[in-house]
Image (cartoon, rainbow, N blue to C red; front, side, top):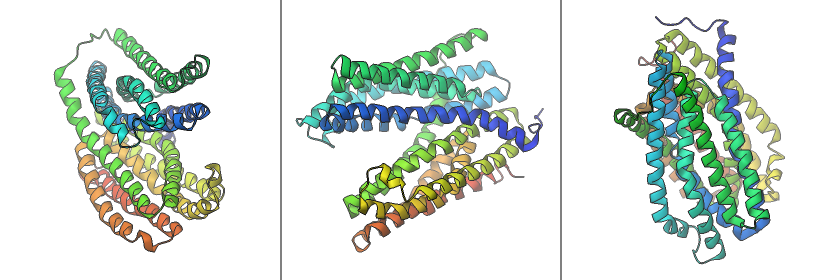
Length: 448
């Protein structure tokens, strides 16, 4: 029997969303803040140490980032089972997702370990000072990759069970321990770059163990036996592969935009790096709503509550657009001074400000895209997201290539503005179109 829509109308739905979104935001923002602290510590070691560790960390975090589907697919599947009143099956799905994460993690260590020198050589000479530090960091930190993938699966399990507080607690605790270990290893024990990688790796495994303890406590309550299901793993692979393709298309779009910046000049490249940093910071707030959408929509779908699905989707869109507008206004008001926080000179200031204004104007659209993406992930429509992700990329790439071919004819200020506008008005708008069409179409019927 479908549930009625949330009591209290929109206010009740908003409370449900914020109950999940606020802790999710805290967990999302904790990790990048830790990276800033770690970067500051590495900076005190020297330029070569910082450069080498940055190259190595970028390769590892890119690999881990592509595996975020482990969290997303677990969240949606577990939420649907939980909403259907099947807590044991939901926990089994979480265990299967964890097993898949462990398998992929082991494979990633093997792949990165055998190809590490080649990957590092693409960015720096291996016999240079920077290259030596990069290898030192890389071949230590790669042992933390399985732990991070396990954390993805564990966090997705908790989110699917409508709990974003535990991921927040574990992430903040892990980040704090990481900072403390790095300080001790790097400066008190004199381990330098190796100490930074070692501290990070140990903290990642500690987080994975804490998540595992939480999952174990849930299994004790339900008298649940830890038996991995091969069919469940296969199901996770099936849904996860589509989400991997979705994530890959997003990464390619971002990389293409960065490539287009390098075609013009170092000024545009540096300016786009600042734009990306600002965009990522804003995205954490919007992504928190997307995580709430995955969990709540999945639960409502599992319960067969179409009225709740419609109400949640409408309110998620309102909140996301409103939050996007607020973030956009804040960004617009600070666009004149924000470049100075990144140490930008006069030339970069002049180049950045108009592009920041374009980014600010696009934030309501970005909010809607994040929300609808979370809705469709929660609904389990992963294949559609993957295929339209490729379509969105095909809509974006040709105009971007045309723009890049005219790079030398445009000033840095104008070219950067066009780049940001192309990403927001072509790529993000294309994503919104396909997402909105699906969410309002006959398949999901969210707005009927």
